[in-house]
Structure formats: C-alpha cells, structure tokens
Length: 320
Ligand code: UDP
Ligand code: MG
Image 1 (cartoon, rainbow, N blue to C red):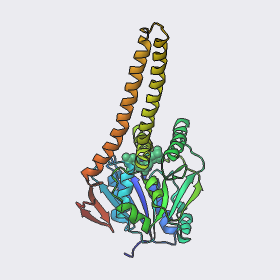
Image 2: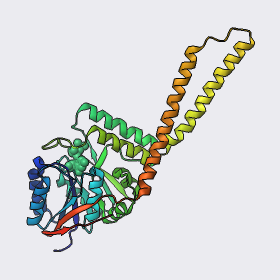
Image 3: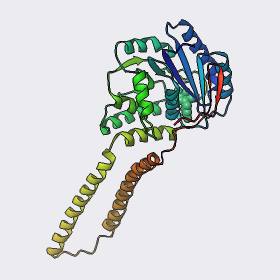
Image 4: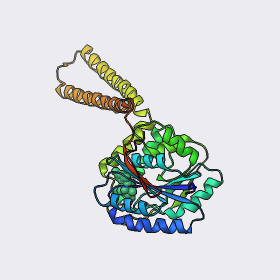
C-alpha cells in the first residue's frame, strides 16, 4: 500500500457504544477525501468490546491500524502512542473517539498545513459540558497562562493537526508526564487556531474522571512552570516579615511596661499557620521531586501488546 499522507489518531478507552458511529463517520471521510488517509486507533486498555471491534475493523480495512496497549495508560499517553505509530507523510490529526471533535474538519486543517503552518489547533467556541466542568476549565486555562512560561492558547484541547516534523519532535521528547497541548505550544514554529463548535459526546460516558482532570491540570502547571517553587521563597519572606512586625510589637509593649504573658491564642495561631505553610512548601517540592523521580526511572512510556497494520497482526512490539 502507498504511504498515507495524513494520519488520524483516535485514542479509545471503553468506547464500544460510540464505535460504530465513529467508524461510519471515518469511512465516509476516507471515501470523500482527496487525500490518502490512515486511521490509527489506540486501545488504551479497554475492558469492554472496544478491542474486538478495533481488531475486526483493522483486519478488514487496510486504512485502519489498531494499536493495543498493554493496559490503561491515560489519554495523553494513548495519543503519544498514536503519534509513535502514525505513518502520515504530511500531517497527523488528533481527535477524540466520542466524536466531540468533528473529523470532517480534516480538509480545513490540512489547508492550513499546506499554507505553511506546523500546528493547527482547534479552539472551542462554546462548551457543551456542564457548568461546573466549564468553569473549572475556564479557571484552569487562566491560571496556567499566568504561571507558565509559554502561552498555551486558551480553550484549545488536544484536537489538532500537526506537521510530520512536529510529530517527530513530540515523539522524540522524552518527557514522562505528558501534557501534550503544552508540549505542542512549546515546540513553536508557525501555529494557528481554528474555531469550531464542540459537539456533545455522541454515546457512552466521559472517561475523564475528576481525578484524571486534576492530574492533567497538575501536569500542565508543574511541567510548564517553576512559579510554585519560587512562591515558596516569597511565602517564607512574607512569613518572616509578619513575624518581625509581631516581635517588634511585643518587645515595644514589654519595654513600655505592659503585662505580656497573655497570648495563648496568638501562639496557637502562629504554630498552626506556619506548619501549614511548611507542609504546603514541602508538598510543592515533593511535586517536582516526584516528576524528577519519574523521569529518572526512565521506564518506557507505554508497552504495546500488538498491532494490526495492513490487515496483519504484528505481535509483541515494544516501543519506547
Ligand atoms: N481516553 C483514553 N484513555 C483514558 C481516558 C480517555 O484513551 O484513560 C480517550 C477516550 O476514549 C476518548 C478521549 O480519550 O476518545 C477523550 O476522553 P473523554 O471524551 O472521555 O474526555 P472528555 O471529552 O469528557 O474530556
Ligand atoms: Mg469527550
């Protein structure tokens, strides 16, 4: 088979409910697109029928490559695994399996790539998630941009198209905890945002738990900012300043001959407040330490159980 021009990466975790709709839309896209497309589906350790469906599809259509990871690694790693296996010579597009990101934007995105942009990211015009999730996203992106040294575009997710070159760079970046939209911004080159309406999930439930969302937010902040670490120093300085003021006040009071030994409340307040400050500071240091530890262990990012490519099963691949 000829090399595909564009690869479409679709991470899947327990998506049996939406799978048929997904394949229908992708098949229609393959049929109508003037470009040679390749679909790279990644099974991120699903526990439902997703792997069987993926297997069946990849065995019957050579445009579909299915990569089966050894367990659930999380969305960001699954997408990274997809990038490592994408063969598209010109561009790589990343979508969600639940069709919240319309794959039909492929043509528009690719036009931008042909104009010389290396990263085309989608900007959500309107979110259709519930109010709490929406406000949390809103807040997160604003905090992240205040803290980090790069300007991650507001309200853009992983839905994007990148050039072959950027894909190679991202695959070669050895970071273990991956916040892809940050890494994609960090890369630089010519980047452009395209607005779109984010759809509702077509079937099944969201696979991002609150815990996973928080992990993502943490990765965004701690992987792209030293501000929390620096804040400890400022926190320490302010604490010293406050205690100096208080000490001066007590000493003057004493010198003026007032009774001093009342002050139990102040004492308790000082102890609890400062132990809180110290514990938070330790936690911040720990956060960076854990990331260094993870990196130093240098474990493979993911293990591949097997791959189905061009209708053939390749076993026991181990990709780092
Ligand atoms: N996903 C994954 N591994 C996970 C969680 C999610 O591969 O551990 C996939 C999921 O199947 C979907 C995409 O990542 O294709 C986005 O997940 P989801 O739609 O649940 O996230 P949301 O849109 O709710 O933020
Ligand atoms: Mg979704």
